[in-house]
Image: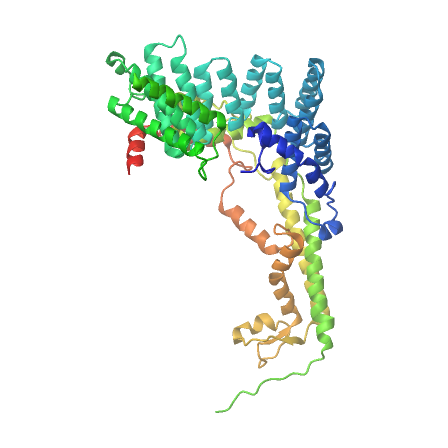
Length: 327
Length: 261
């Protein structure tokens, strides 16, 4: 799928982002520099569409990423001309451009001060609050970033983006229970997001294999991780990460099966499924993973949407498995 | 059998150029004018302060938990339920915790509620004033005679609609007076406005009327006159009675069966 300017470009590969930002001159040229809102002119010229402004915003992000500062400034100027300096989203984009222009910590500090000034005036400016948190994080001030995120989530607890950022921050600090809590909040907002189910499974798997986890706790995490991965592939048939995680968890559970002594935990937690079910799930995951790898390698139609690195990891996992069975 | 003779009335063809066309043009122009007047009179939505936002979104948070609790394990759900019901019942998320238990302020005296009312008033005015003016203009100049014959037959019931202002008992309802043409324009120009102004224009009165109907039908969630404390209490009760199940129960058996099937 060719990258489109109508979607946020944050997940794109570097090559795709470069391709987008190379479109910048043509996009900037093909659309008028200003759109007038005067009645008479708008009757005769093409009307503006929300798509156009979305395009500018995404183009701005791609250009900043690939270092095309000139085009980025042009996009920003047009957005400012249309929405004014005081628009919350424009303020955040403006700050982003300034962050990109800054070439030392001192300049970043100045941008941070500006964010603080904006927020002192208007404390519900969510785009700028998020920018400030991202800046704090990229400056390595994790505790401050976490504190501001929690403050943001206190008055806006229905923001999945903020919750997942918080989960990521906690995860980077190895605070698994907190990360799991935050991810569960994301799932409450988006109950059918299979990638979030798989992500939660991954974090639970990490928590289970972390050093210092007791047997009972690690088993609880593994049982839930298994269920999360199962739910994720139940929601999305060909989700590589889901099957990968499912295989990892089941292999681990087969290798050291749960001790019956710890099995009698209280009813609030999920019980580990029976050994035969685990083995069947393991088979299923292996089968599906090899199918995905095979079809991707054969370049079959509709099977080329996977990430190269993820396919490579799956292949490695499968080959590990194969070498074990040979022995 | 005696045939009813076809009524013929000789009309000046100039009627068409001097009455029908002007009325139509005036109607289109007023529609456009009304659109831009509404756009200019519209006030920007009022900014929410942090406390209001906190109050509303916390309630949404509770509702979200109630709707999607099945993604959680029982333990995590219980933790959340205990925390949220305790906070909801103690009023921790309220905007003004000291005003708990007092009667909600009268929506008519609340300045923030007045804004919404004023907006509605303005819209109403923008619709009523031009309509009244044009109607009296047509009545003053063009009433008392028919101006055109519709190309299709109509039953007698339409007489009062089409021949307003022409008091002739036996005339075929196909004959139409200018005031009737005006009414036809009001209801028929919708697509013309859509073409000129885009589909979400403010010129069409039909859309505006539909909006009012809709607003009356569904009660406002965070509107003026709603006591947030009561909402929180109700939500706490809703959360308390949930019998938890998880979508993760037996997911692996479901998955294995689904794949085999």
